[in-house]
Image 1 (cartoon, rainbow, N blue to C red):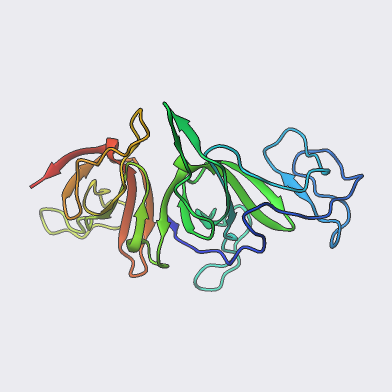
Image 2 (cartoon, rainbow, N blue to C red):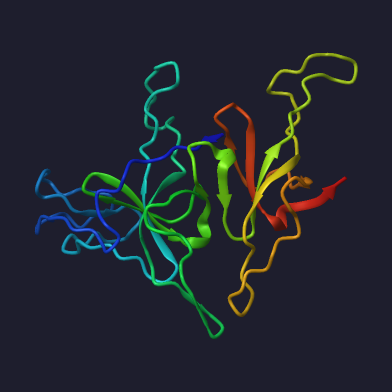
Length: 248
């Protein structure tokens, strides 16, 4: 279960990122320049070649550059976590955006502004390290929603996504036996808390979603991204195509 976390303010503006790079830095995947401090540079973890002479990152088309939140290194009880057990962050701050994309005859700009705190799909994009800070380049469509507060219940979903408050799982059987968390059936019913503007048609215009805030819905059991609110309430964000029915 992923927790929503916000990262700090970006140290670099939207126009790009500047940093000094060692000219003799090794051209190997995931290898940092040998010297630190003034000789910090850009490392693309998923790239086949690291080219240290490039010091500016400018997203193209509908891509967005995020500065991601650092993974939690301790549990709430203060226990140190090994790197393999640390929860991968799913939130960050937008530090640069592309010029947008063309749909039909229309030019559609990226709808997310620099400085926005956002939540993104867990395995989306390419990780990039710049001056010892983790960044991520991904498509606008891989961004799940915009965080207007630190609580996920206030998330503004994007595109054709909906934010749902998950129904509480049954903790007893029909005969009254208490169920442990491990055997409680995962609910697939919830209440719509917020809806996105809809996906774009062939002319670049948003198509309104067929559900509205307050609707009770049935959704695919293993769809979407799950989050926990500040009060412990479970939420899920999924695409409207993953909704099975409206309940009444």
